[in-house]
Image (cartoon, rainbow, N blue to C red; front, side, top):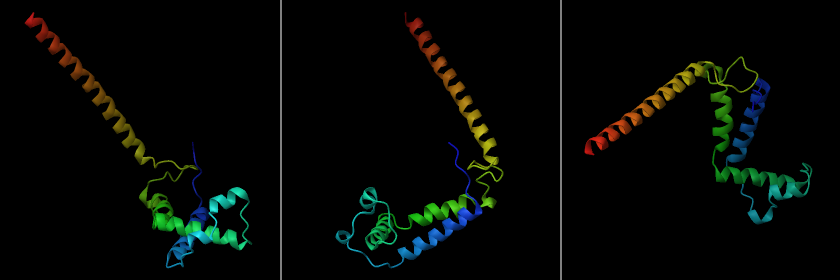
Length: 143
């Protein structure tokens, strides 16, 4: 499966989402669990309605709950993707590919690793053949 590479506008939007999540994460008042319907239960029953206070409270609680379960996950995931993996000087993503693909510099490393694996399998097979021949020789000498 290929995934389209995010555009600069996508990365800017993700950065803004990260800022929003960080703002919500900083000292936001806690909403008691029993006073809000679970967001996923609510949206299974009906479409999300941004003009409905119960829906907004449920969304806020879901975001707050995520932040409590995995503090700063959004910085690691969104920030890591936008500011580390997608940053061209790090040469992780192929700048010429329209999809998310590893930088070409990794191709040679992958080819070298595959060659090493093939060589290791070859010598491992030869080792086991030699041990087997050795054992057969010892058995024939005992007879």
